[in-house]
Structures are given as structure tokens and as C-alpha cells.
Length: 252
Picture 1 (cartoon, rainbow, N blue to C red):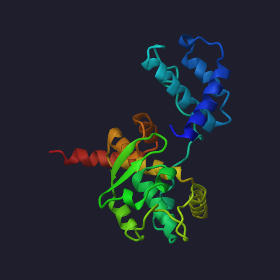
Picture 2: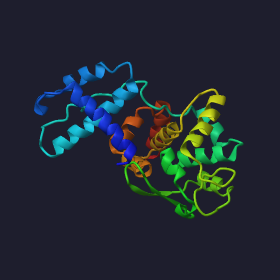
Picture 3: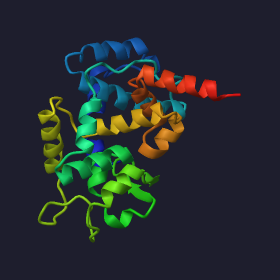
């Protein structure tokens, strides 16, 4: 795990320890976890992070037969505690932005389905004619992702130099905070303030709506199957229905 992820796990595992300090682990129920989460309703983002962290701990315990079942299974995430996908009109706008760095960032985030930090670490040597190689900082996974034709066209507009793909006008690697400011400012100007991570959700939803399986989608984003399924809840029902009927009618 990345250092930032370890810190977050430590925060929420300590919160679990404080909430259920003497509970025998085999006696913790889904109801107990719901009670703890209900007390965090005012901060849904923190509640969802607590649920994910606790669920990971209990999954580890189940795998090692310390407990029979995970008391977090079946508990849904709270609304309002996640980064939302960018509205379609803002997504279209950022992919056609006049600012070349804003446009490049959007293309890399959307067409690779990666986190901002992993995109900023991409170098030109990571990109071949038809694939981009990614080593995710958070999960340590190594991915080889086909380059989407739209991303290929965008990359062709930029000079290939040694080092990072995303750079400042002076040639230094673009920093995370500056990249976030650029994208957040663009989306705010477009009337729908959004964060960079929302573009990753856009990408996952687009893959699913294109008919990709959960496993196929996860092979691009590098996420767990469970997280892809979680993102899948925001797929457009009408778009999926169109695709389903088209496949149905195409069968002999």
C-alpha cells in the first residue's frame, strides 16, 4: 500500500477500535456495524471510508478463518460520500478544451481510467504505439492498457521528450496540486464543479455501458471487482437497454 493509504487505514481502524473496544470479534454483527455507521451519517465520505476499511479487515479475518462471516457484507455506501462522475456536457467540453494541458490531463484520466497521481507519473517511455504501461502507486499493480484512438490522437499533438508526459510550460513535471486546480477550475467554469477522480468513474461507467464485463473493466482500471460493481450502479439505464436490445435483435 502507498503511505497515504496506510495512514487512512490506521485512522479508520483506530476508529473501529474505539467504537467496539471489547466486542468479541465473532460476536460483531451487521447490526453493530450499521449502528456505528449511523452515528457517522453527517460525514458520508468518512463513513464510506470507515466501511471499506473495516470490511477489508473482516475479509482478512474470514480468509484466515478467525470469523465465519464479514459483518460489513450487504451494507451499502452512503449517498453523498463519493466523487461524482463529470456531467456529460462537461466531459465533452474538457476533452475539447483549448488549454492543451487541461485537455491532455482529461484524455489521460478518462481513457486510461487511472488515478491522477498515476497519470502524472506517466512518462513518454511508458507509452508505446498501441499500449500504455502503468504501475499503480496505491495497489502496486502493473497494468498494460491499449491506447484508445482518441488518446493516441491527443498524444500526437504533444512533443515527446524525456520524462513526464504532463509538464509545466517550463518543462517541469506537473504537480498534483496544480493539476487538480486546473481541472477543478475548468469544471467550475463549465458550471459543474468536479474533481479529477470523477473522470475515472466516467471511464468505468463508459466501459460498462459499452458492454464490457466487470472483469474486463477492472483489467483497465485496476480496481477490484467489487469497486467496479459499486461504480456500475451509476450506469445509464437507457443506454444499457439500447445496447441490450441491439444485441438481442442481432442474434439470428
